[in-house]
Image (cartoon, rainbow, N blue to C red; front, top):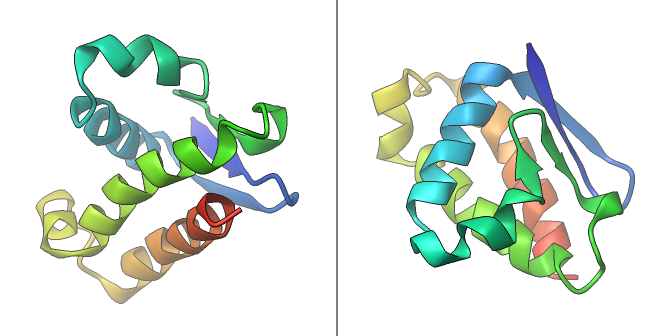
Length: 104
């Protein structure tokens, strides 16, 4: 299975379900439980589609996911075997997309 993140500018980032579910799990674990329902509809096991989100939610959701992706680009990524340049470059593409969305 795979997952896709689609930006509000029509960019797509594809990955396998393991990578995406790792990002998603870490992102949700960083949220207080009372905020899970708020973000649950925006990012699911098949990805996130910023085009379908309300415009006011896009930057907030992007910043939320970006915090996790930035962590995974650092030493934390090695815990998941993502310390190779190819893996880091792939995550960096997602980080760049999320950063553009977070900045509006």
